Amino acid sequence: MAVVWLVLATASPWSVSQAAEVDRGGQQPQATTGASGAAGPRASAAAPATPATPQAGPAPRRWVAVPRVIGRITSQDLGLIINTDDPYSVQVGEYYARARRIPEQHILRVSLPIKSALTPSEFEDFNKRIQAFYGDRVQGLALAWRMPYGVDCQSITGALAMGYDSKLCAANCGPARPSTYFGSASSRPLKDHGMRLGMLLAARDFEAAKALIDRGVKSDGSLGLRGALPVTAHFVITSDSVRSVRQLFYPPPTQVARLGVDVQIDRTDALKNVDRVLLYMTGKANIDWLDTVNFVPGALADHLTSFGGIFDKPHGQMTALAWIHAGATASYGTVSEPCAHWQKFPHPQALLLFYAQGATALEAYWKSVLWPAQGVFVGEPLAAPFARDPRETREPVREPPADAPREVPKEPAKDAPKDPLKEPPKDVPAELARSEILRGMSMK
Image (tube, rainbow, N blue to C red):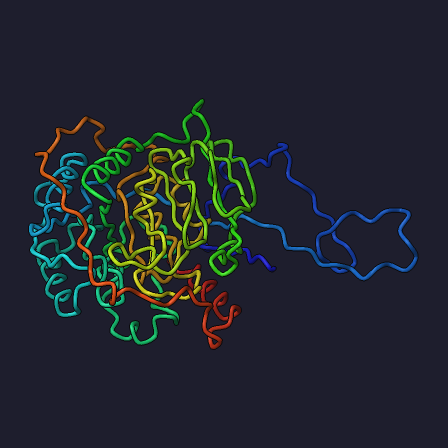
């Protein structure tokens, strides 16, 4: 299995070495090269005269370099949209506005149908209202609802940022339009890339949404502090080889002392009884033992599977809402069959390295997905645990009226997706996919 060292930027890169990288023994391991040119054990003086056929081992994991990021999106750059027809949206939106002190002039109230996906015409009307109301005043959007999460086969966050793509639904298993914000150093995505980033403030009910928002606010500037307890980033390789395709880009196990992050590679179908988890990245349809995982405020977690972004239809797979319910602060899932294109999911190292520079959850997740059209971003957008200039309030928030939260309405089971996660089609070979991502990595 070849591991490609992907370079995300050509200028002013930022890597783990600049965060005082050390391995578990405090030294960098030294690899030797055998006759095959592959890394292997040092030859012995007593080696036989006729050498055995060399066995090429797996290439060592390496860190990528990402652009150095200056600044981040704050509440002054964020728009909040509330659906007045949805009691959950009203309750969550009002709480979030107070928690993050969103300016009143940044709050747009709309009337939207409460269903899984908007039609293209419904989306066009909605998007026109956004453009007319905000202009170029905000860089990102917090959408205070669980539904709608889609536009036809696209995610609503993807459509808002990159436009509705009518061709995608005819070939949803193929490559999608690349995001120019992938791997970007910019903290002004609308200004620099013409993309207004979005994230759903989605949770199972209002109490879960309130806890999510509180975790995001509490996380600001809380990690990477001198003397603080370390946190762990878990990159998990499961028995599901198709859904574990992102393991190609997992980083090496490392203790990043200056940031207080312990990076681990785990070979298991599910973590159990783990503490102070910052990142949990895996690939499987369903993840067990989440109730034994202790996430820190600001934690990110997602799993590569087909329907992690479909919140209301029976499909037998865990959704991003399960991560939020378990204590994560942001997550990601696809709303239509993506096939096993890892470009449609967060790049492991990009997600961690941008977040570790002080980017918000909104920015770190968006910077890590090359083909985001089918993926919905979920969580508290402004969470920034590594920020060194916390500008968001941490004052307690008064409770909103205790109205009974409305459950996510169910749509008929006949509309439920039926296809399991598929391997990439034969006409999109792995080498082509790699070349596409390499080109994408150099985008500014």
